[in-house]
Image (cartoon, rainbow, N blue to C red; front, side, top):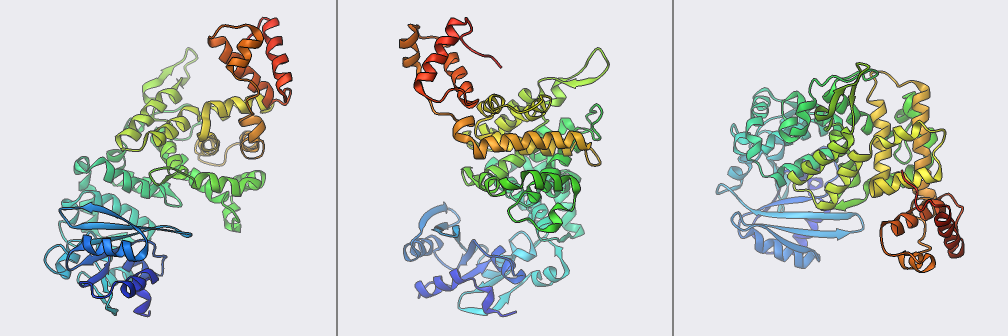
Length: 499
């Protein structure tokens, strides 16, 4: 391995544009990923001097934006925006007096390596991180690393799964013991680590390991009441196991529906059917799940959070019907409130909380539509009226929910029916959006009141809603037809349709 290759191009550019700076070292995950040959996007530098001053200079010379992260610890950030996406460069003053002391205070040995910008031929590795990378071991950089910062327990899980490392025994003990201390970590930091986990290709693996180590419900306490919750047939799993299965299967489904899938992605016959029948939506689905909702979080991350929370309302709504069957009536509505509260606790934005809540609230609707002979344009319009921007996410979760209900593939007819509903709804979302999902407003409230001599009130809004349903069905396309339609509704004595 060339020592020069350990310095990304951006680090070399920084050296060229900022001569005469105090000593700088590239540290942490960027060094680790460069050694592993993984893409390096964000950079962290340790500075023997005034780090925020260096960060401001870097922002000026590189054409980026400067943000002050920590006045007390002298830490600044540079945000660069390019065609390849945003990149961050963080600068922090050395902690502990010198570089070795700084590295020994870091979380894990594989993150406690450094490369000096003026000596790129040498990796500084006081804690044995290079050997641990070779041995595929995750080990604490110091004996109190997790006690000093319990959030590192969550990071240990993420790194172990994403880098395929074995957590060393003493480190594993500290990870387990961190459960009782995670409450002391700020909600913002916990949120950020959780959202990084949900960004993984298969977040289900991470959530399962978190649960195995006793950490999952410390982060998402809404899931603890699901543990051991009995569910009626044909459910193969109890509550929490079903939830984890759904998250697993959602990852499988999204993998199978990625653009240009490899043969291995559709080896599963059940996923193969979804891949075949929904394949024309690959690019549109990819664009949809990648879209940022706010705060840098994508719909994909929020969909996985909603999947983890989709049945959170069941423990409070379980009831035995007269036929002896256990039911969870309105668990979707109750769960939506719990999901919104969880999102607020994690300091997600109001828009993100609304998205997660919408997914949970509507996750049963595709199953209801499956009972009909076909998904009509009117039914598709109503579905997206209720689910809004989360509608496509609801479709994906519904498929994963059915897959996660069974220990083996679901009955072929049931799966084919659900995939058919998904195809109809995705057609509406991606190919008929301007007619079915969001038909143009041919009339407004003033038009209706003038034409029909109506006073303001709920009936006006209900008429407009019924008109839009008629537009979705293709029976009304002009303003004249719209006026005739609302007049016919009034003359027929039925001013509005109801769900």
